[in-house]
Image (tube, rainbow, N blue to C red; front, side, top):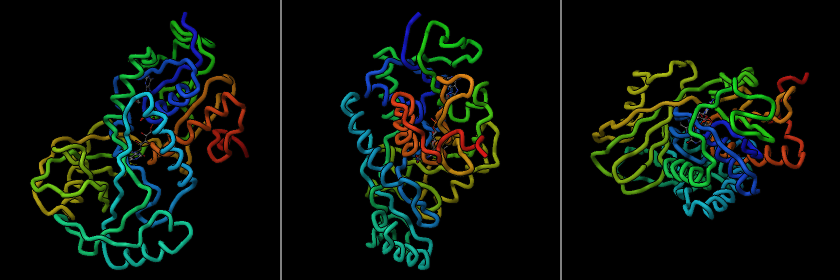
Length: 344
Ligand SMILES: Cc1cc2nc3c(=O)[nH]c(=O)nc-3n(C[C@H](O)[C@H](O)[C@H](O)COP(=O)(O)OP(=O)(O)OC[C@H]3O[C@@H](n4cnc5c(N)ncnc54)[C@H](O)[C@@H]3O)c2cc1C
């Protein structure tokens, strides 16, 4: 039997950012990750403090951005890589009215830190009404982040590359391990978890394309009209992700490919080749807050889920909340506490 402080199930943003807290506090752990890629690995990696449909911000946006920056510099110390690409989002305006709305929002206390009042016209793409820049936005290098973390976990004997089999849990032991705490971070996979399969997460499917452009762009920023568009490397650009709350099949929806092609053609007027299409299921919650808490009968079994469309900011920020709750007895914020669904 091997004793560990923690067993983590799932290696998406929730599992990895929670593992970072354990590394930072020198706790022992193993992380179980199955074959199937979760939503995190197909995500765009955009770090965005603004709701770009209505030009509003959201709960704790500034605190979350600051905490992400701090966490990324802690991570860099042991993976030796900086994963945050310091390129802002450029929102392509649909019309003059949108531009006026944006400008009026730049004068509010809430949005002034995030919306630039200087507009830019970009070359190569159609942007008749120009673009506005989202300050403090950035992009995560998603593939490098996951590749490096999985290598780091392997080198340090943290990674168990297999599906976690719930039927093998017995009290505080699982197969060859005994643990103090068990933290479930399975995204939509939580549906198979007999301890937490009733938590209120709703799948919101998303597709993206990886495309090769016939005419290169001369900037690296993240463009946003309907969806996000940015370079992955010298060859490929990412375009996505869609929001498909009514689609539940575990396969590519061909009509989404068409929707993405039309969306991209709206502002990229040159030829492009589709190299890949992928999809994932965001674990969303009706009140748009993550879900953290423990099982009523098994006090040391925890769930960390419901990261929604903001896996990076939510995943990073609330991993510390959960850690402080478990290790230091800090009360969970009521907004994210699992108990909000059971309390009257
Ligand atoms: C197309 C798309 C684009 C997105 N873009 C962005 C973006 O730009 N910025 C952003 O912040 N967020 C984005 N998101 C949202 C973000 O991806 C999610 O919020 C986030 O991935 C949820 O992370 P998670 O760790 O909870 O779940 P997941 O990433 O789904 O990870 C859960 C993991 O647990 C594993 N697992 C489940 N059950 C078991 C088991 N029994 N044993 C072992 N392993 C198991 C799964 O295989 C999976 O790897 C996007 C999502 C999609 C679909």
